[in-house]
Length: 223
Image 1 (spheres, rainbow, N blue to C red):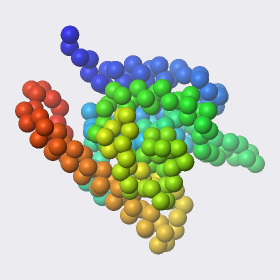
Image 2 (image 1 turned 120 degrees about the horizontal axis):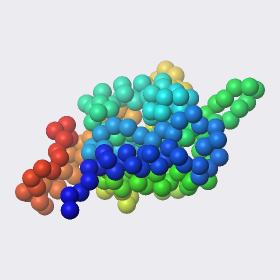
Image 3 (image 1 turned 120 degrees about the vertical axis):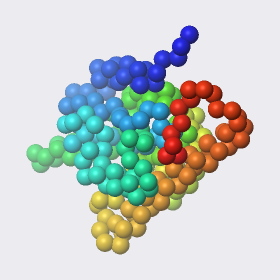
Image 4 (image 1 turned 180 degrees about the horizontal axis):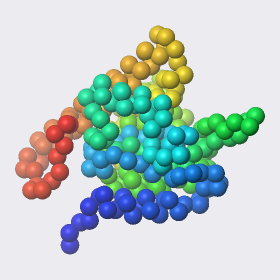
């Protein structure tokens, strides 16, 4: 029996996710922001959740934070087409204050309600390296109560990937100024470079253990 392409399987999961009403965020969303990029990539980037622009377009990281992530990826020698990008929750978490809508961190109940979609994504993609952007993502995929300032840049593992690293979220970096901004941004670039290098390292180890690459196996030249 021929194994179905990961793109086809992910599309089926996405179609189901777009009908999800497992938490109250379904009542306020414009779009479910499932994820995008290369589902055959060994590197997956997982953020916190959609913001205003993401909710409007249905695409992850397309606002100011997305532009900063794109810039950091370029400095790390990559582009969106080389990775897969998603969030721990697929609908925008927001509150209305003084007539204005602003983003807020997702609750644990919302993260749990959305967990099956993230689980399906990571299980199907089978990444070698996961980059968690921000504390909520790291606390979900690495360990609870993750301290981003103390533990970013360190390596962990989980059931989805042999190597997991946390980096500062681009939205946090944008709130910094001057030297603090430059330092925070550089840490993001450095962590993305480290993630790319770790993919290469794991690939080398895999090749040493299994020197003959099966015919038809997808290989990404970037890594």
